[in-house]
Amino acid sequence: MNERRFLLNCPVDLITPNDALEKVEEAVRADINFHIITINPEMIMNAQNNSQFLNIINNSQMNIPDGIGIKIAFKLRNVVCENIRGVDFARRLILYANENNLPIAFLGAKEDVINKACEKFKQDYPNLNIVYKRNGYFDNDDEIISEIKSANPKILLVGLGSPRQEEIIYKLKNNLQGCIMIGVGGSFDVLSGTVKEAPKVYRKFGLEWLYRTFCQPERIRRIIPALPLFLLKCIIEK
Image (cartoon, rainbow, N blue to C red):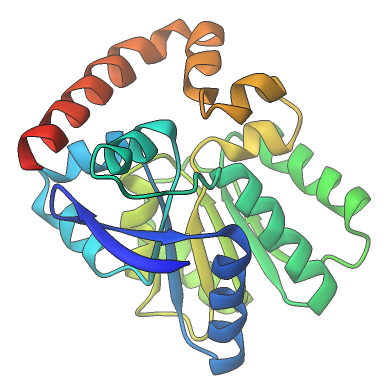
């Protein structure tokens, strides 16, 4: 399954994880830049008042549905949508890089977190060719872009939070060649083992956001208003 539908003027690709990875493989063979957005209700709501971010979403190469909110919104339209967890797809890309000897880069999170994550990656994927890693605390985008360009990765994971990560990837698209780029939000915290992954029952029903809210109550102010408003707007749009 691979069909592009729109929610509140934002494109979402109805695609399976395997088909999404096939598209990545096609982009690697064609040596083209390929921007993946793990799109969720919070991003879509942000795009309603941020024309620059909306433009980035509409010009990415693939927007994979991440979160129960997207699935519910499509269910209201009698459209089947498979939830693809961003952290799971990040793992697929790392494995793919390891198996195909593709240079990979990581940008984001705190210094100790990104170092711990890369150490774990090297343990789990002995052949992984990490050509660049950098924490997410910097002021000069041009300097970071220059560093990544010099490293010349073929896969780049950026965990700066949205829309910051999408904005810097959008800039990088004009400076790199043949690179798969994806924003992974707080996935480095999970991948490094710094933050405990949501229990299986939460993941099964797409409720990781609820588990993370329990663990990090400060997220309530950001997530809780966005989800019901998103669903309400989708109902009105329908």
